[in-house]
Length: 534
Image 1 (cartoon, rainbow, N blue to C red):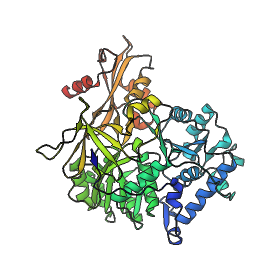
Image 2 (image 1 turned 60 degrees about the horizontal axis):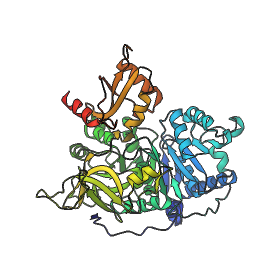
Image 3 (image 1 turned 90 degrees about the horizontal axis):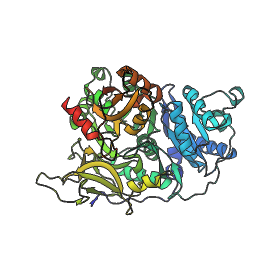
Image 4 (image 1 turned 180 degrees about the vertical axis):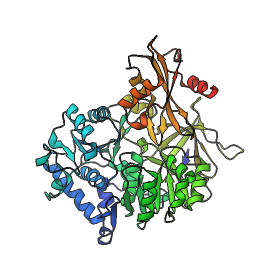
């Protein structure tokens, strides 16, 4: 068993709202919490807290209780913080939805989560309305944050009219340890997306754990380009920055020139990124045209970042490069590179966070791995994690929960790691079959199910392969119907019409048969071997 090099930290028995805002001082109330780079508008901590309370009060007046689930389909804008924490302040549950989702994907998540409200923004209203109509959410329960007044929109309330009602937040009563605060969706180790039940205590714990190694300060300006709807953005950007009284500069979508312009204009000091952004910082010539010398720290997560790229990026922009490891089921962080440690290679995911114990387990024998070899590291094993940040379970999926979370409280991550004598970990492989495209999880099973619905497809399998930039992309192996004339372009267009952009199939190969086991399971290792031999 491996423990953290840090002593345990106290986990307050509070809701996430009370933990973040309950002790807000007069001095901190005057600090800037959020900046909208599109307008330059600033929101102070005091104003944000007041907005959260007013939004919670408006929801409660409309019947929202601790039993209500609300969907939030919204990019990174300052209002996200108001509605996200307003919903939690009201004691309700938030299910955050990927802003790139199609109406069908939004509908699936709303249905599975049992959401009876939806919050969105004008640019996403067409798909939001289509999904809301499909699941029976009435117009008055579809809030369009930046929309016109409800009297002009067929009944959709907007944020301004809800806040100006001036209502007081309700006295919501619940147990922070067991009440579900958020329901992000994750594919876990395999399969289609499942609702991950995270309690208020899970969120409070992970913020407390992250504060130790991720040295974020009130003087920092954090560029918030990674989406808040993703658990990484939700905890490590939004909640941690608010806890530390830092300033968040919100960016709705990534564009390299805009990204660099905003850093330069607003003096951003701390960047949270995914690996493709690190590649751009390391190699793209346009970076040299901007003064981003205010940046002192860059933290990469959501997918593995190779050490060479990380070092190149760090040297080029003169910043400390770090990375960490996590998953939605861990709220999400279990390992992170401490800001204070220069002796840990940037290719690693750092050390175990406080209050966490973890194991490495041999994937063949089930034996726990504890011994270090002559090279100063263990042999590889599946990482198992136990701590206060581990999820309650998957929503309405007891079997999937039991497969992932054992009786001793260890979450089986499905990822293979090695431990080093220096106390840090490196990820070496993936037991799970998920594809990680630019930090987004893609479940092969979901794409396979879609492809099998095409009339010209007899059978299909999807694996992750590396593109020319060494980024993982989805590749489909297709058994076409005889004499169908099916083309690669037709397959890719069909998938693109039915899924969010990051899930698109980007390569197609036609084969005679999909390799399968006697039990009918796709033998992805055979497909990977075929790919390697090509």
